[in-house]
Length: 284
Image (cartoon, rainbow, N blue to C red):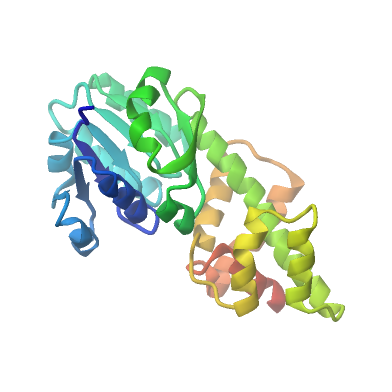
């Protein structure tokens, strides 16, 4: 099977292991990152570019995975200035606003190229293991064309509808996760106040009907009281704000936004999302 030239833009905590999975699968890969040092581990097997625009010129399928709306705008504004991107497929795996996704898609399509949004569920460990859940919005034919590559990034690829649907699904799942993480932290603290050891409470949770992959993956962090960012609290706050913008207007969302915002204000934004427990300790 002939594989097209694949480009990957964005080598952050998630993008790096995802791009590595494509490289390890043997696909002809080119990479770009704004901080050049993050590209160095790719120099032996892949093409490293010092310009996103030059990468796009030389690739057929381009994945983008950056942190927020501002980063996406900077990136795609440069791409829009290219004279010819016809026939290329752009797959944005970032979690950004739906309005911006649709705006970028329209501009890409006006230049006779194709676009999909394909954000992921999962953090750094699933990204490294290639076991993410990928929620794809776009044309079914385009999805089939890029499926061999997506299958190296995730254990499941779900086509959820037209362009923008992937973002909607991602915001919905992260909204649910924000509830789980705040609820888990509050439950542990409530148990502690009642004299229940944290390790005992977490074991009860994880062995009960309310246990899940989300509670189990955060258990070691809660036990060690150390919160390196598999998924930073600031990213959850960003996604809660995006969900509100897209129409989530519920009592729960109001509480979640207030709590995660105050945890950010308390200096916890760069830590893992479950570090919200440290903010909750402060207000008990």
